[in-house]
Amino acid sequence: MADRDRWVMVTGGTGGIGKALIARLVTHGHNVVAAARQPERLSTVVGPGRIARVQLNLEDSETIEAAAREVARVVGHGQLSGLVNMAGVIVEGPLEAIAPADLRRQFEINLIGPFAVTQALLPLLKQARGKVVNIGAISAHLTVPFYGPIAASKSALASLNDAMRLEFAQFGIEVILIEPGAMKTGIFSTSRAARDANLLRLPELERHYRPALNEMDRAFEKAGADDPQVTVDAVIKALFQSRFSARAVVGRRTSAMLMLSRLPIRARDRLVKGALGLGAALKPLASSTVMNDR
Figure 1 (cartoon, rainbow, N blue to C red):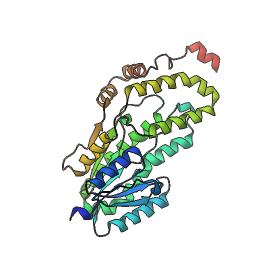
Figure 2: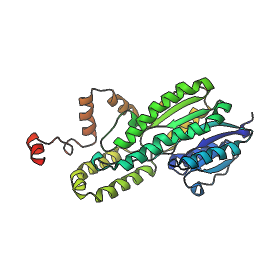
Figure 3: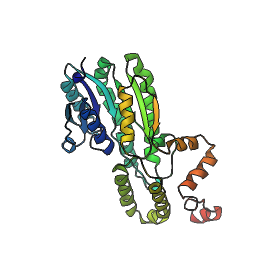
Figure 4: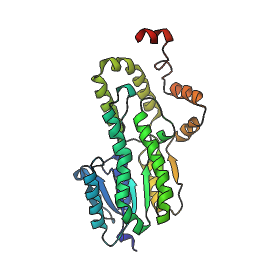
């Protein structure tokens, strides 16, 4: 089948990495089904490849089903040779301040949504013996303070990815997990703004956690982040190389984080808090203080 009859679907098409990936695919002659909650916000890309826009809300099963029908219509007699589950959100902040509804939304978008989309598109992927590329995060290996919800969702996605890989191999479908470190996209500023807005409604928790959060923010800014093209490069290789790692960690400092994740827990905790400047801010309270607070 000619390349002009093959399609790749990318969710999260309005995000920084999603936009960069779609642009790379289309300008290199690949056809893309670009999915987003607000498809009118998808960038216009000019290139030899074609682009079809699809509305997709990962929190709404009806739009997922409608999107799958639209993808089948767009692909027609061609093939859906790839699915990139890129869409995601970050819920951050002290666990004491996280609303259960926000944690549910974290899992709805980062875990249940990709599962539902993959399941809905499975008949097309079976026909094409295509590839599924799930975008995880280094936090699946090493959880740091105040990023518990996102880390939990990415850890769960890694487990789901393993099950997909093992179960879908019988259909000739390859399933790959790419786990980036921090990327220079708007998702982090958005999640930080949401975190701070939430804490403003909880003044006692705001006062208690603000010193630690400020230290954390400074540490992250000092460490820096990678250009989204780092993740785009990895996705392109995963889609089009005949052999690619089943689980690839990409980005600077991710190797160091992997090494940290393998240390004994207490040593790891000390090093993580020290690297983030949280040794004093998250110092355990004296037992008498804890008793007096009860």
